[in-house]
Amino acid sequence: MNSRELFYRHMAQTSSFPLALEIERAEGMYLYDTNGRKYLDLISGISVSALGHRHPEVIEAVKEQLDRYLHVMVYGEFIQQPQVDLASLLAENLPGELDNVYLVNSGSEAVEGALKLAKRYSGRPNIIAFTNAYHGSSHGALSVTGNEPFKRAFRPLLPNVCHLPFGEISSLNIIDEDTACVIAETVQGEAGVVVPEAAFMKALRRRCDETGALLVLDEIQAGIGRTGKLWAFEHFGIRPDILTLAKGLGGGLPVGAFIAPRDVMSVLTNEPVLGHITTFGGNAVCVSAARACMNVIVRDRLWENARLQGDLFISQLNGNEHFRVRGKGLMIAIELESPEICKALINSCMEKGLLTDWFLFAGNCMRIAPPLVISEGEVLKACGIILDSVKEIYS
Ligand code: PMP
Image 1 (cartoon, protein in one colour):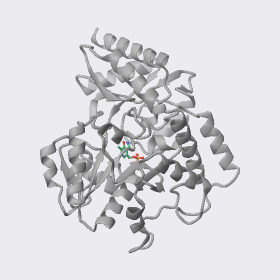
Image 2 (cartoon, protein in one colour; image 1 turned 90 degrees about the vertical axis):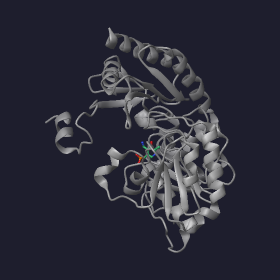
Image 3 (spheres, protein in one colour; image 1 turned 120 degrees about the horizontal axis):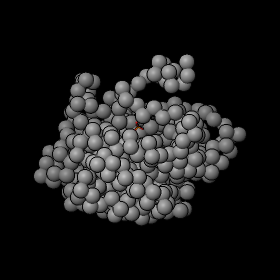
Image 4 (cartoon, helix red, strand yellow; image 1 turned 30 degrees about the vertical axis):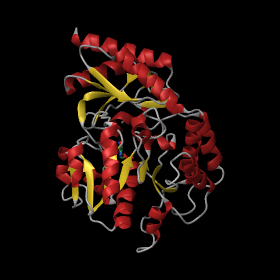
């Protein structure tokens, strides 16, 4: 049997229609399949490959760490230089109070840690989240995810979770003194890129301050430069009490983090001791990659390129009669009239060597989330292919 047949036979499938591209290698902005075809990557493995594929500084950092040690102990016991460096680098580039970093393996685990931390710190029972938010697939993260069809089959989930309409200021009164935390994506990703109004985010911050509820901002998808600022919350003039990161943080290796002020995070050390534990969290090789990735993003101010090229995408694609386009930086959605048209467009782009995708809770929207290092020429090429494909579909 060839790899394709073995893929369908022995690998658990998550849908009946995987893209099933067989990858040979990846470099910079491009993926290469086993038939020797080359694809310009507009999805970055879903917002992961912020520096493109196999960035030389990430590869170098990984190789260097491979020669020192791989796994030596569970998280939090030994002093490991790459972990300390990454935590320090994150703290240096965040608002002063967000100075304590818990390293984990994934976005879902970062959300789990953040929710547990908020409950333990506040001693309160309730969690508030928003409709159409995606926070992950583990039970806690799924509980705060705001899409009923995605959750229904897995109930019972966490109790005491309430979802409010994202963007509706009047509903924020439900946040009260029994609310441990409110969790929100700063810019919603899987909803099809929903950018909230600054007035809403400010009102949310204010209501959390009034009630003592912790504000957890999930920037697993929107953080690390993707929206045109290093942190998406900078667009709204607010700060979170707890921040979750993953995806782009690792430069292509699995790393997540939840970040909070030291006095908040310190509650995980007692009652119970070891209040959150992870064996692999902060794996030395993964965090070496993350340290290198963060270094490049901060040194080269890659959020500025994200803003520039994001604006170029929008200006090139705006005004077409068959779709609408929206986004922030390089977190962009093209909204089509139906999921069927969206699928046809994705397939047509793929045939022309352009890799895109749809969104989990917006099947009629096509995803544009390329590596932050995309060039002007590549944006123009991608837009040309998208516009040609749309023309073909409607001809
Ligand atoms: N939060 C957000 C905003 C996400 O986009 C994702 C992943 N799509 C997650 C959490 C979960 O991350 P992971 O798949 O690494 O568990």
